[in-house]
Length: 429
Image (cartoon, rainbow, N blue to C red):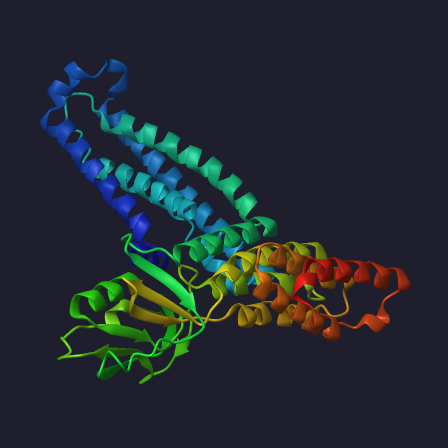
């Protein structure tokens, strides 16, 4: 399922093309009814739904021209929103709007309506001696398009709100965190550990599979690799993390086997691309929010409230990601490891999340307080080990902040937050 989602994200034209195809088939069906079974149509449908050929041609031409205008307006609106996303938020957030199902469906319904109207008009012959149904269907189609247009205006107005974007990215990332631990069958389990299993005792031979091109790892078919490993009694070790940038001739897999290695194509289960995606990459979802936060605290935009909102959402994400702390994901069946996948530890994720924010916001007390609030959110949802890491990281935050420039009241407020975090992590000090 997830590979189809990635294909749809890569091929923006796919959904509008499906709408155009369905609309074209509908047009052909209606044309066939009007031309081959026109007399039966007179008996089945009420006279109020049937229109003369001349009037039908006028209606179809008008609707086709109107829908083409709506397509142009919609495309221009999308370009304006994309410009806003790129300049105000982050270039990495462009795909969040353009691949949104609402955007693609709106374009699809407009293009489908145009295709239906123009095809029906093409085959609308004046030699038909009876009234036709095609123009009536086009009128209903245009009403649907008008409803979608009104909703699209509302959707665009909501999409350019930065808080809406942050919340949506957070929702998608939380879904990615949840899906990472799922398997198909009950006896299959995903376990996280800091220690890599020793495979030398059970498997005697190994073979490395190298990449043939370069790019970011967008998708890894863990379940397919798991199924192959069970079928042929293998252990598949992934040498690269999801989201990593790899070059030519870089080792992607190491396969351990006991007997002869079957002829299988493992490379097709790893998809490379020019940019990272959020489908399996939790860190990339976090990076999107970090970039929006950095733009908000930049001197050109200077929007600290948006930055605070982004930091608090990061705290929510890291609190959930801390539940999966470890260096390796192990896919097992009956306690036998079949797939080994590396991942970043929570400590690494915590640093990459807040290091840039600490650097660029080191003179803004509100940013420091927001980071401490995020740290408390993480600690509240985590165990002893994570709380210790959070407290140690708070020392790093404090040392990188310019406290000397703060007023006495500002310092008092900061020390209050520091005590709250200390009390929350007191049992690990």
